Amino acid sequence: MIRTRCTIFLAPDVERALADYAHRHRARFPTVSRAAEHLLARALAGGLDEGVEDLLAPTIVRVVREATRREIQDGVGALVERQSHRLAALLVGSGKDAYRAARIAEVALGHLLADPVRAAQIAEEARLQAGARYRPGDPPPGRPMRPPGDRE
View 1 (cartoon, one colour):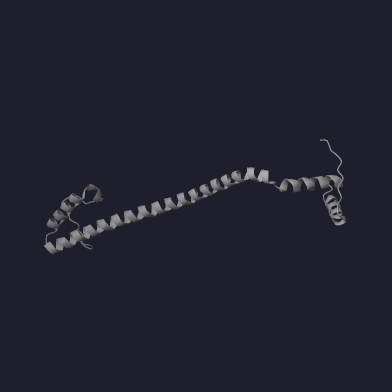
View 2 (cartoon, rainbow, N blue to C red):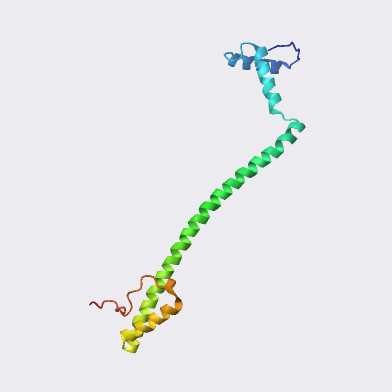
């Protein structure tokens, strides 16, 4: 690497600070000149001129947008999954509750008619009208639901 000589004029306090810096970092910079070169290169690399800034701005905006999109997508995806599981649990619970309510209504109808077999037939007709998908875990036809506490 070719080096050239450059004369610069420094204020005395800046010269002292540069000498102190070179002394503190003498393992990396054996001379004040090398320390000054390092500090000057860092300062120049840190100061973006307008042309470089105009080139970097769209890239930075694109990277930030992509990171934001990924973060939102990951967060929303997890939220949607949790809400889907919660909704499925609520639907299963409401289906079970509806089934229990239908069975209780069948028992109540059996007591009102004083004929549990007739109540079971009416409930089966209602189930047939509702369709097969609304009959999870039905007991076999002709076997009425017994009231709670009643054992065979």
